[in-house]
Length: 360
Image (cartoon, rainbow, N blue to C red; front, side):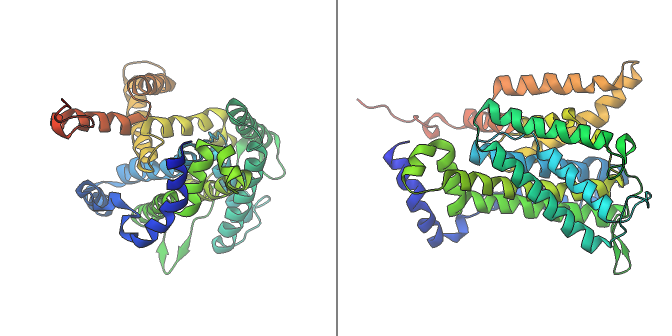
């Protein structure tokens, strides 16, 4: 890390304090406002299937992948247990709340079950992160993958708490103020609100002193330690924040399907979250939502297409794999990288980096 980069890490928070309007510069882009309006009026232009199975599912998966993007993009830590944390949260909602398995669920009201689930899932993810930060590179990936695999097999074989491979069905969803919040339109707006809050929280934190220090730890941990930063504490705190985001997505997931089973936390599903984040792009918070939209569209319509032509529907993962390879081959930053390259190619030569008149 250069001295100039170190100066940016230590000085930039003060500069940001003088320019709060630049905390979320993407908001000023016209495309951001167009997307926001479309999302807000989506119930007026989409039927129940598209509203829940496409857009709500995209926002939920995008929020899960957002937690991974925060760790990988800003912390340099690739975690394969984010879906596991979401699944743990979903299971806790089912265990503490009300479900069709009265012999397992404790019957708490949702406003008690959900905070308990979020707290326990965040603690679970933080503990896993505390183990993972002691390693680097491939070893971090393997530890988080091992945690995910262990949780999958534990839920599959444990009947007293998780009801084994059957899972927990008919999980109750919120009803208050005379509104069924699992009805299509109310639930869509709940999902949209949670996804937006998580998105802006990541955007804000990435420019806050903690986020800048975390990026410094990502780039040069030894230099940051020499400057007096606690490297492991920053990494564990990043896992805690990412775990809370994943736990929120898990609550929405169990409300969406009203059930949770070991298949929802399988190793393959854990890897799907990584694919979503990488395909969309892990350098900006919008990337996971782009990747999630691509994944959901392929999962929904490629599956139906393959069945119609007489092929195994599970081969849609083959198409996802091909798309993943193609995008990564052409861009190391997923769809966002491809978009940025396309925009740069359309700029006049004088406006491109390094363009303009040469030196004599």
